[in-house]
Image (cartoon, rainbow, N blue to C red; front, side, top):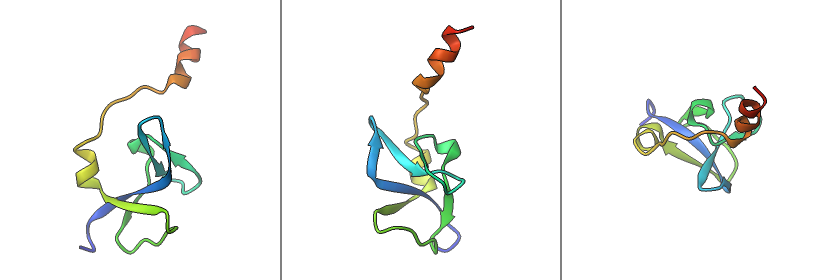
Amino acid sequence: MADELYYVQDSRNYCGNSVMWWHVSGEGYTSNLAEAMIVNASWIGRPTDKLWLCTDIDGGATRQFDMQLLRKLRSK
């Protein structure tokens, strides 16, 4: 349906076991759903991009911690 919203997956890559989504800025990718681009069904991307219903993905999302932040914590 036209009013449904989708996350845009870059199906070429993964980060560990995490899906890579188009970043909301449209400039790069993220594994963080809070930073992921959300589009409607009319969005046109690359052939390797896949649209996934937000309602389906949100139900399977898990909470994770970015290991890059550990260094900042150790320096405190």
